[in-house]
Image (cartoon, rainbow, N blue to C red; front, side):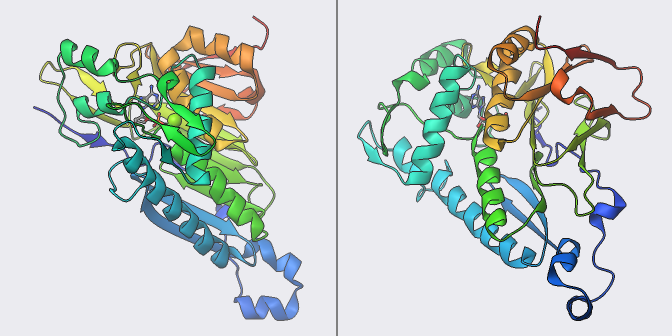
Length: 361
Ligand code: AMP
Ligand code: MG
């Protein structure tokens, strides 16, 4: 029996009561008695929307919060319309049906693609935006799940490989038979763009949750850090602990996000190992990346999940510029030293072994 379980929220947001507090008085009353700069942090606007194949929750605080969120939503929908793999009007769809002809891209798409190709190279191809044909064979793009034959996988793998994509300025050439998929980086990129829109409206405190990809703008309105619950990869009813963030993003990848149980009783998930064309099984149940740049977090959460513990640690030591929390299949937590202080195990999770990874081996 095939089964699909899509977990919408990977990260449970644990917002302190003060962070959620709305203005106690009406806006007009506040404006009459208190200068704008003081009233600003207490004005909250929220938005929920479905985009990029997931639910997004956006909260912004400040005098222009409503207008900022409206503009942010427009920006998100604009990016989605460019990058959707299924929408026949999108640029990525056009590229994927270009039969090998050069295609002119918008600045946004050229930029996110350049970023994806750069990260593919920097991660040794662990993150590779050309796996779409293989993802389709598994049914992850359609929901028609199946286990493809090794022969089919091997054949399709010959139509993958980021290094075969030619991006020259805003013109991309994708060889016939190959297809692009920005699924591993698009949400992170869009979260950064959303934060940029909010900042233009003077927002200095916001929480953006893109289906579990979280980006924080500033601190909570009361000045304390945002508190983000980190999911327990072995159950969707539990959190492992809490990460405190200010002006940072955290993005989590795990095999529980989208998967099916095959007729052989084995669980197969949507993050593929580009070397094998099969779901990545390299000893990690979950990989969380923390940095100030959400698109970097997104690209690396996928890449590090594919790499597995040893290679991920080696990668982190050589690259730096980000932090990570890795949870192994045998229930150990590895956390890089930069965020060890900011992470707290939840009460009742004391049985977990937590190892801090130092920059020097
Ligand atoms: P994420 O949830 O960010 O880890 O991204 C997973 C999504 O990226 C999948 O749903 C696929 O669309 C795509 N994908 C799967 N495996 C890879 C990979 N190794 N490199 C790049 N994209 C991938
Ligand atoms: Mg990712």
